[in-house]
Image 1 (cartoon, each protein chain N blue to C red):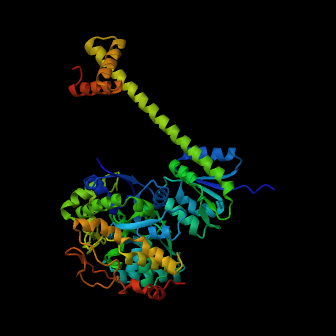
Image 2: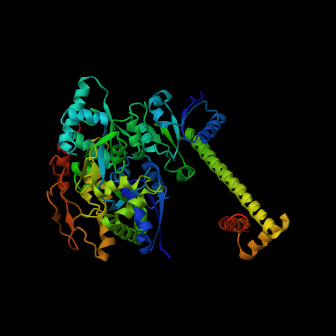
Image 3: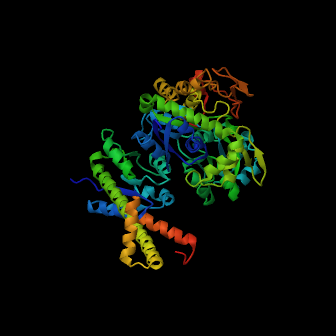
Length: 408
Length: 199
């Protein structure tokens, strides 16, 4: 008889697999958790249903809990992040017409963010000189890794994402259709929604999150702070179930079963052949030219489930950069308190899981895979470089923020 | 002086439900109501509609796009906030439960909007109830068809009258603590498995 009843909301995107697997492969039941999953149609619905207590926890975009706690959303409950759904998984896709324009300025089918970003910049300026309308890119949500990594990439390539292009919001399953209909010229989204356009022959993947910032944060588990405080044992049981589910998802022997499971209409409803690309990191760069992207998406390896405070603070620097929030000591504190590695540690160290000793790390400093100090054994991290070679030291937050350009 | 009438935008992909909401709004004296079913067309029309209140179906997968458009877009003249009276959790919960939400422009008094949201909630709930009843009626019809077929099978294979065939199924259902329709379904399934004329 399960002793922990937990309601979880999720969006039908590949990285929700950890929650699905926790339930379907009985990892939740083994921890005494009766996990009820609720598929949602928008992040706003997830936020609202968390706020009124329909959900105890939910699959969320990494910056969303920060936005809730910083008061940037119309309705919100205070949310904490005790677990991450993994690293990477996104790509930037452009229409065939934009790709042709980029190729005229030196873009190559290598997913290289610096080269292809420069080419996009040259194309954007050529269009501007010719009086053509601004290119319109879509992301899934304003407070998303997609929005911030697209902007980081473009700004790092000399394109002002607030003025030289337009950024709109489109739900992931509609991206390919919107581009086919000419309503958008490109987008940044998680798999399989990049490959869907490639397979349909309407776009090309210009670069990927793993190349813009390798091993970078994406979705997280948000938990209502009040619930997490009142039900610490339920939360710990859920985190153990998700830990086992994440390890199962990472293991290549389970990938055929996992892609079949996720292909079901109740979850992704996309063919296993397409969803497999996210798991193997083998993407079509165009013309059936497949390339394996190292660390494209990690559901478990390299401490992928650890909620680093430095990830929260990097998201915060981007929220400041693009004018979502003012940089104040109070806001820094809210952002830092949002991600809770202590909750992860207290749930998982008792079962012998290797957990980092530190709450934060310097992001972008590891050029190779590196062992880290931890309470268990063999925990390897990184490499974690940004494409422009910059380093984010969370102890020098204000310096980093001051050195950023926003185009204002 | 009476306050100027409100421009109300209803976004609902379900045309019947949208029409029901519109009717409710007109009955309440609101004459500037715009219904939108296709969100992609809304982007071009939003500044022309210039809504004071937006009522939105929570099932729309475009809600994140709409919310961002209301809050940030240059095409909306005035910023729009979600209808939230933080002291009124019951209304928020009732709205989400019913599957509807509302946004209002900044500065609009909440008392003017509350009846609109309440009307939307009650009409959404009434619509859901109507759909449920329709679904039940459909199920009822299906059940009757199965029972009639099972009755026919019994009449043919055991030479029973219609009333006796029904009485036999009812008795079996009572003895086995099952529903008549389940007994009838078993009979029909067996007949289908055995093939024509075997039962």
